[in-house]
Image 1: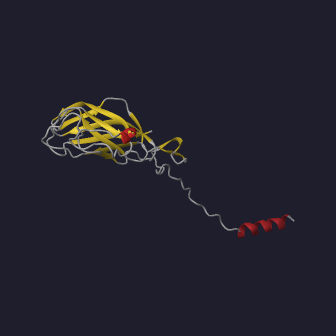
Image 2: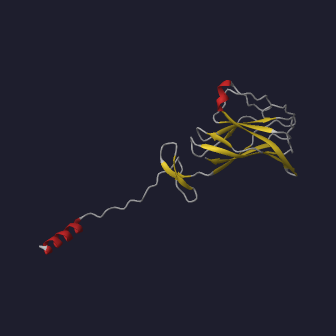
Length: 203
């Protein structure tokens, strides 16, 4: 009897198809694939997926076009509306703006307020060398202001930075909008005199 069962077992396993081995597919989390160096404790992303991805930090630099050889008036926008694309790599998440710096080729040092919006303030006025104003419909989009007042000059230009705690901002999409507003009367020497650099950390 034992011999019969042994023979049947050998026959069964010999005829059974081999089980295919499928590679483990790890889903993306908030649009970000798992890679070495971006792991953090388990958390739920905006779509309800439980995952471990941290997209870390982002630095975005923009150079708005300004007016050269003509003095600005305090309260004027410097350049037009700036779009900080992909500053938030995970759509719908929140970020901390850790650092805001403005570079000037012509050694300007007037305070500049960088006003942040979490959506395009399409009804407001952020036009170069024009008084900055926020429309009532856009007031809720204004989510923070960085006061760039600490300036240092060098032979190649000047750089100003904010001196305040990080600014926490919930960003519905991946872009943040900013308007630079001068609190002095600077005169820039070229249309590319000013650059804005924003460094952020994903919350």
